[in-house]
Image (cartoon, rainbow over all chains, first blue to last red; front, top):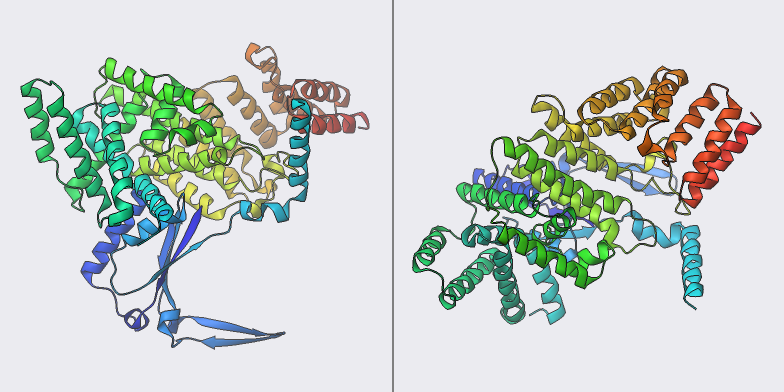
Length: 139
Length: 419
């Protein structure tokens, strides 16, 4: 399964203050660990929200609101996409992240299987037929 | 404090992250992967007993290693090992630092992991045994999970692993990374095991146990790990590229009722662009290392031609034909020839493809291979030779074991009749 790991913004990241050299080195080390473990699929850091925008939808109307946005804790400063076997594995990896005084959020990514039942009624039907056949043969 | 079931799941997760490094490090000390695994298992049991109470330690890998080392020393004291040997191993252990973020340590860990994979994929073992042992010791899978994935009983698989460990010990397989001429051959065995695991998962069908398609992910993980352990080996990147690109199509390769959808009929919007991007990057790494491409990199390059084409009509068939030429030189096989014929037919017209296919009709190994008459029928139909095409497609329909494919082949045969 895939997890998206969301790293929250803070005042520094929003102010465009670059992390310390030590912090960058630690993070690079951590990223390498993730790659070596075959966990890392993708990951990027994001510019401050002042370089971004929001598009608000109200019925047919679209309003563009340029950044920055004020509520730093609700903003995202970066993300990873990981391939893991369980949520617990993702949590274990997050716990090893070299950061202090922040919060990191994990969210499972939808995959084809998650839609399976809703999207492929034919498939489910085929399986049910197969199951019925097997039961018949066992009688 | 977390409830016990949560703690167990956390410990399982730690195990998945740490077990290969733990077993590899222990194997270097005790020079026996079987014993190393038992020691690691002992440490896991200790964790299962203690962590639900004490919580997961800050550096769980170091805790597991320290615990396993204590067990190893206890074991040595109990057994009547020669004093000299005892000292030797004791010294080795004293030198072994706790896992930390030190770069030198990383090299050691990498070496140990490579030694472990070369051991579990040693040619002295049967292919089945190599697969089982690799998934267990490097993948951190349980015997039960591997048994489910390969549709055998847990007892059979456990027996297979016990025998494999015994064979390794009895054959005195050294725990090391092979060098020189031996390296290529041994690496080929490792890559074969990984690709076999991948294909086992890839051939899983709807309704199979979820562990079967899960094998694709396990193989990809092993491949990605190997690519970092042996970054200078182009074929490792070639194999990773091939697997990433094949996996990118998994959403598109079965239809709504579970029927297989052929590559050229797949909805390319459903291909996973993230995996394609990773596959193309891995192929670029293989190519940058220089030298002629090996069989995996060539197959990856062929897969990449399809991945790059936005629509089937954009496919660079001339390049695919050239790549199959190279593959046929490197690892000739009738199946490669048949694929080359398809590519030639697409690149230079059906007559060019048919010329090669006709040379294959007397090939004994393809005698009952349904794709031979299927391909030949297609090429004949394109040349307007409908009667011959129909009988070839009907023959293909007789040969295939897949019900749905038979239906499709008969449909195409009927289409020929109405020319």
